[in-house]
Amino acid sequence: MTLTLATMKRTSVFLTFFSVGTYTALAILMWALLLLANHPDIQGEIYLASSIRNQTSHIQKHQSLCHQRRSE
Image (cartoon, rainbow, N blue to C red):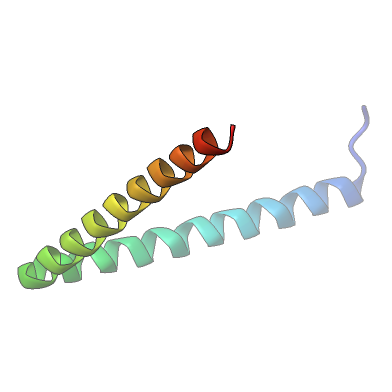
């Protein structure tokens, strides 16, 4: 396959957007971790919220399975 100038430009633009998006996501993640490291009280709140969410998710899945078994 021969690469044309248009194909190379599209590839270049795609790679540029991908790298910029990756850098932005990394920067956001780094700031979030820095803020969490400086505020341990919020770490606990986030942990509780995520564990409650996970428990709720597991309960909902269990209820769904039980309901499916009852309908059979």
